[in-house]
Every structure is written in structure tokens, then in C-alpha cells.
Image (cartoon, rainbow, N blue to C red; front, side, top):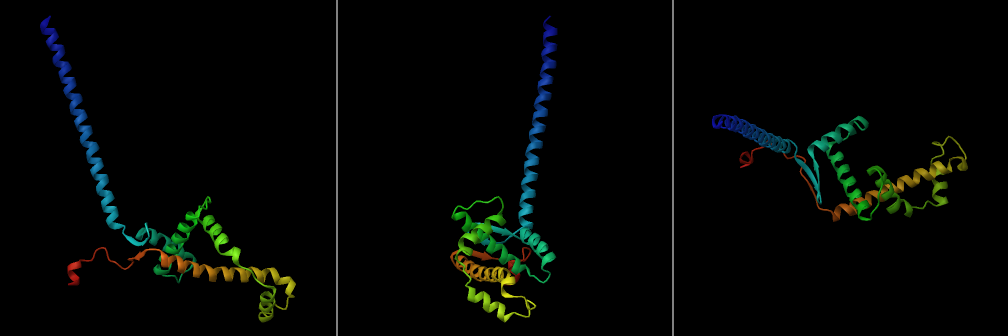
Length: 195
């Protein structure tokens, strides 16, 4: 009877050893997957560098490249610098909108709400401005009477003033922000070559 009991415990021991070996192999695989995942993140970070900081917000090269490609489809003559500056301006405006606790379902709506609140509400177009614009651009309106095009003129002049004031507002916000742009940095350059 003792021999049979020893035999059972020996097979139970082998089963436990096999379980331990499987656990060890599983643990090694988990550690390897974590290490490989970490290295892929490190490699990804090396390939994607930051091209601009706006206070505590970063814009990466991949974000810029994606936005630049989208913009080229609409505005073929644009430059990466123009797109980057637009991204910086957008980031600053969004930050300001969040500071005053505006909320909207999308960033575009949030920007519209911010511009309406901070810029549009202070714009007033006088009747004299509308009439003067009509008189100076009679040819553009093909002789249409003032009342027929009044709303169109007013909309145009309001948008023009919004754009002018928005540019000034952005310049003021940029002066108060900590902005660092590093667009032309070559990630593969050797600093020793510059000596």
C-alpha cells in the first residue's frame, strides 16, 4: 500500500512541476511582451518628435504631417509653418475657451462659441458703413439696390471685422503663452558635426 501511495505522490509531484514550468513560461512570455511593447513605444517616440509646445500642450511631427496633408487638399499653396501656426492658434483659443468653462460637443463648436462670446458680441456695423460699402462696390452688386444686398454686405463686414479682431486677440494670447517651436530640427543629426 505504501508503494502505491508513493507512486501517486510522485505523479502528483510531476504534475505540480509541470504546472510550475508552465507558469514560469507564461511569466516569461508576459515579461517579454511588456519589454517588446516598451521598446516599440520608445522607437515610436524616437520617430515622432515634438515640433511645438504651447504651455503644457505638445504638437508632434505626426500630428503636423497629418494636418498638413489635409490642408494641402484644400489650400495647395500652404506651408508647414502656416499649418503649425494655425494649430498653435487653435490650441491657444481652445485653452482660453476652457478657462472660461465653455463646453461644446466638438472643438469646432467650442471655438465658434468662444469667438461669438469674446469677439462677435462686440462688433457693430453702422448703417453708414453698409451704405458706403455699397456705393464703393456698385459694380460688384451689378446695380442692385442697397436694400436688396444690405444683409449680404452686413454679413461680409461683420466677418471681416471678426477676422481682424481675432488676429489681434490671438497675438495678445500668444504674447502671454509660452510657445516653443522646433520645426526644422533634424532628429537624425549628429551634434558633433556642428563643432
